[in-house]
Image (cartoon, rainbow, N blue to C red; front, side, top):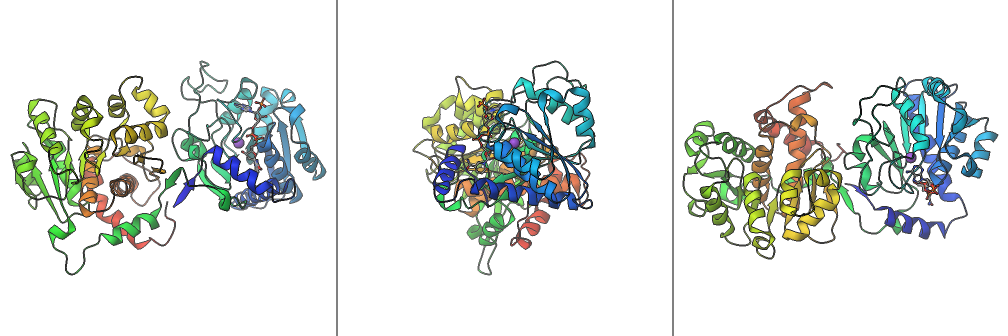
Length: 526
Ligand SMILES: NC(=O)C1=CN([C@@H]2O[C@H](COP(=O)(O)OP(=O)(O)OC[C@H]3O[C@@H](n4cnc5c(N)ncnc54)[C@H](OP(=O)(O)O)[C@@H]3O)[C@@H](O)[C@H]2O)[C@@H](O)CC1
Ligand SMILES: [K+]
């Protein structure tokens, strides 16, 4: 499990640790770890000696880390150039160390467009130490020309120090560029006032913004440098599961010799309608490979379902009359007519402790009824909205765009308000349960999963995980993880190039990724 802590918790822990260490010791630990990662990255394509490294150093501790790391690389023979983005306030110790090691120093004002392009064009590695956890808002005007040039030059490896400068460390938010087009000709709207890194070397613990989009896209691969903070860090704010965590749960629900289909769990699917039978088929496909012993289907697409999935137990009545199940999935392709409302109300009338997953059209119907139909009544329910559905559930003051921009806050608010676990779909899928516990981030997604019906497969899969037992949050997190891996598997196969996939391909890839996770469970995985 990877973890992340809020800036406030990091600051508190740093203070406690610094009080026990000689002055500057913590920054030396950070810089040593940072330089070691940079040296390793440079060695992947040769030696450190003679390589051109450009350090962008701001006015705070982040710039200090970068300058000290630059000094260490210069000490190993690299040709290091620093550009001070706030020359009067550059870290004095770091600056002296870099100069003493033979590094060259320029001020932002001296490095205009052409000079910046020449310098960054020669760089093999750029250290982004403009601003770290002390940053507020997007990058300021004075550094943007340099950042735009960096974006345009034939890419050196960009290593962000602690956080990509301009990314909000707590939320992952970035400020979009409002200017029409940058000098590099980048179309308006695509750029952000933030650095885009290949690798982020973060200190002490992860920062939430490194794992949640759009910040995650700016962070690239995240490497953690241990600076001894752990004993002083409180509970994590974000958890990022890896193969080993998911493997533990999958082993726990694997069938035993004495298992029968009922002990493994039966998942009920109330999905699809005469208009949208496909959603029923895809939900059943996800559920059938999701770890339950059997799938029961209740609804208008019974005939189509049994034709495509003959192992399914089908009926065309309401869920309550369909027979015993351990978890219900309601919503995909249900449409929003009176009959759909009757189905949702029927599920809401089922035994309170029975796990129930509400997706798609069922979410709109839940939103109409209000949080009180779930809060305090259905402790094991799971909502699986995308941003638009989340905004509808949250009501006044929320829009899909706001949910996208404040994903962590949105998923927490939803879980708190409805009193149930929530899986917020999107480019980074997040999960939260009511209360102050950590938000889970799914690390396995791929853009190729943005394809029709992909959410239906996820709903079925998550329902099967609910039926197999455990908390709604654990079931949802496992489903999101497997679904993301299956999407990657379907889109990329064994290679590095993705291709378009269908939701059916995602369902078909589930057994393979399940095996992959369980068999490599001891390693880090993603
Ligand atoms: N504390 C520790 O023990 C350790 C800390 N460590 C390191 O220190 C970092 C934290 O250092 P920090 O607190 O000095 O803040 P930092 O991120 O450098 O930025 C503050 C400066 O940036 C400026 N600035 C703000 N917003 C901006 C913007 N949008 N665009 C441009 N500039 C902006 C702001 O300017 P001002 O608002 O004052 O005008 C201020 O001067 C942390 O991330 C880690 O790398 C490690 O060495 C481990 C030990
Ligand atoms: K930075």
